Length: 329
Image 1 (cartoon, helix red, strand yellow):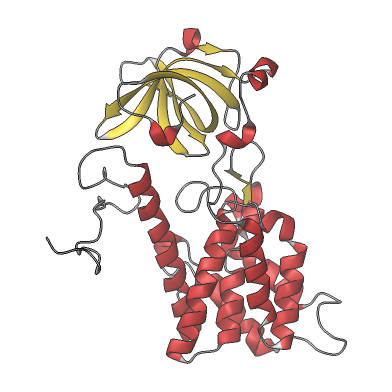
Image 2 (cartoon, rainbow, N blue to C red):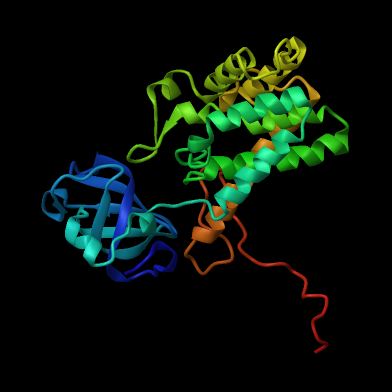
């Protein structure tokens, strides 16, 4: 069966997908249609169901695995699907090749390897910080290894939160040495900056915001986790705790890592470590947006279609220089 990564314009095909996003809409002429985002392990693609009354068999919704008959077409420089028929997966589909894992995007990196590296970095901090970070990582391990980093914008796939967190942490290790700031504080902030997303997002069905996520957001939820674990029994050796000033600065890193009020930050970065964490976080998120936009673009042009998150197109070309060992012509 077809997969999203190999789809070409003008193809007609049957395939299995997961409905990532589902919205019933009306055209300007007042006709009802469905606006879907479909995903498989290789990517995601927008899809339209123009005649839901006849083209949808049974009930479908976000998070459902579905079998789709569709045609691929170009719309404003982007590939999208025109769906002729769609229904939920049934028992017979398993016999004809359906596997749920083939319909869900995951991080391309080994989760076990990433998790062990994150734990190793945490364990290399000052003993009090190491005990604190290790206790939190152990408590949230099951969710942390699987959670997406976002519903849509960056690293929005299973394992994306761990991938993003580890990448930001490794960048912060370099920045701490380069700029001679507190490595313990910056690493703690990096490992925990998005911990609130474990409460902000739910992966039941399609990834969606929880009530707490909508009402409070991951920044406040993360600060609550950071503060709660600093006072929890059994985290530190008896009679010891994180210094209050260290905890205050760590909370500031959590509350300020989004960087700008327009992006939802509670406070702007006001310390060296907070500023470095913000830029490390922002850089990793934006690079992931670029990388996925280039990988998923189906056009033959040198530039991608416009990316509306970053309001620009991206260049898809390779390095301008030949390999150093290239033979003379």
